[in-house]
Length: 383
Image (cartoon, rainbow, N blue to C red; front, side, top):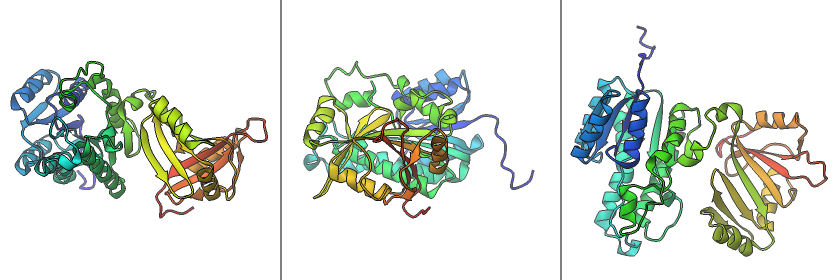
């Protein structure tokens, strides 16, 4: 065999940490049903053995109990990966909540915080470092995160900040290794033991079971989505071949509002839309709200004018502008122009690292809704 030709593998292989219960177990069950070779890890040996015995009737399963934060355990996982000829998918699912009830940061035991960071941040990176030479071509790395990594929930300072660190770590890995697909995925609230520990004594029976998040994870390992942050249950709503039929990858509705505080009160507080990001300066302010698969962005007049200046050179858009995230701005622009859209200006690379093109939708009125096509390219890239 030519040394430059990679060895062919007839069976896909995945390593899932924290696979004895909850999301990890549900993920393992689905991959076993699909015939994947599985390497499973968890701290609880007895429960992990029960999972191994259950799934071994369907596929090859190697179960190795231990703590992924331990170097010796990671070496055992590496040996298992090599025994099956390498890895297609790594799922860093194992994590720890920290103390329960959850303390505020000023009362957080620092030794406990070190443990949370060791398990939720350092261990996933250590495992990636250990296995990196045994990834099969175009591997998928999934780091399981949480909305607590982007939302400043009181009482979630330890777990939330560790997940925020994991998200940034994932984003940098994706930038440094474009040949990999690195996904940091929020599975949403789930009816799991960890979630119960986060809310001791409360009834969490209204939370979805972990199985409801699994189709979104499968879409990532079987599809062709780029590296990035995803919400598992939002992905589950996509048609299986949607990325092939439609190049649009996201939609943001931008509303310019006269009374910013009242709009925030209506959409954030009235509808209960979670805050993803916000920015405030002496001259302007804006807030990004999650609305499921799409987002609703509220900006005041000063912020709208600043974005128009960057993308068009002058105040241009009306009250509503639709911003689409696309894989290729030029190709999408050509397609829309052929359907009657009109360019408002030339494409620009923005200070936030997107290649944007502003268009006017063919609505038959002079002040039609403007569209922004936005492709993530990085701050250093030029047109």
